[in-house]
Length: 169
Image 1 (cartoon, rainbow, N blue to C red):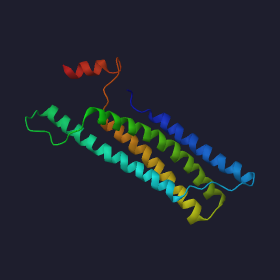
Image 2 (cartoon, rainbow, N blue to C red):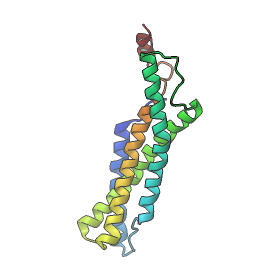
Image 3 (spheres, rainbow, N blue to C red):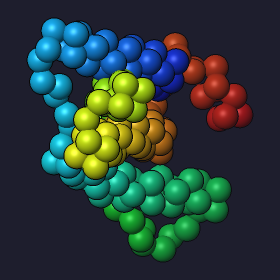
Image 4 (cartoon, rainbow, N blue to C red):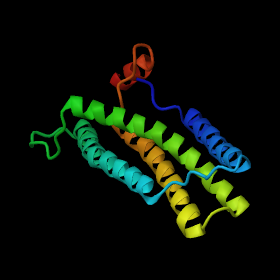
């Protein structure tokens, strides 16, 4: 499995921002009420961040201990255990959170920018919760990338065979 494509995630974030701002502009021009992200949206994104960290931190500890044992082999029992299906699912969760964070962070950033630029809506009831959701989405995306990197997935056929061969010699 290839690592996450950071430029693609940034493109998704920028396109989401443009979509969020354009959606707000279109609704405002037609006289519709504006969809505002509430605090519940931010809370859900924070829960996702917590779940990602709850699975990601044990993976990180396991990978660090594995690297330490590769450098200095030891017969002592392992301090950190994780089964490989759980490790793989954690990496998949991290990838999904990266894309979700890019989309959510982008859309809510666009909405928050529209609210800030136009001065529409109450700052405490509209702009602040929408901005908080944007920040939480971006944090979710960044943490997804970090946790995915912690997993160090094995390369696909031909995607690093030369590196693997060099590391073995």
